[in-house]
Length: 177
Image (cartoon, rainbow, N blue to C red):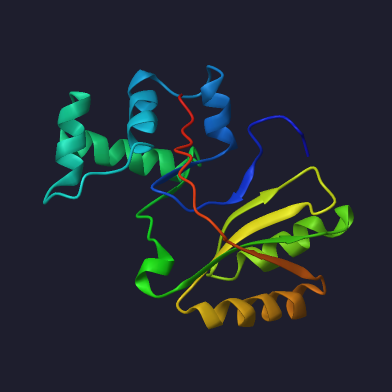
């Protein structure tokens, strides 16, 4: 693991999450100009209109089918790890929390796979810290948070530290490619 940015996401959850391959693209390799424009545009969100790909394609000066194909290719080759909507779980009556675990380095990949198998887990990142695995839990109900944490602890054999949100801030983090 590295203390420097960008750290490798192990599972992502946003409109357009990027992978380590995209991180290489940030430094000048692997993607062409149109792919860069697409990656930058997708990080600003996606329009809620009848034909959202057509709207974004028009912004980028390409046709809708070209944009759809490029996004598909970026997903298939791993440049984009996820492309989809973001939901505010709490506003929908769900639960949301930040969680962390202290995992033995030799056991990290096994636990990573086990944690990522839970559909409620998003934004799972390795960190250079005693608590070296951090992730977000988004559940259908606030009560489900404790159930998922208990299930993860049982499956992995490691304690999960629950750090529920006390105040929300909007950061607007974007990685210009």
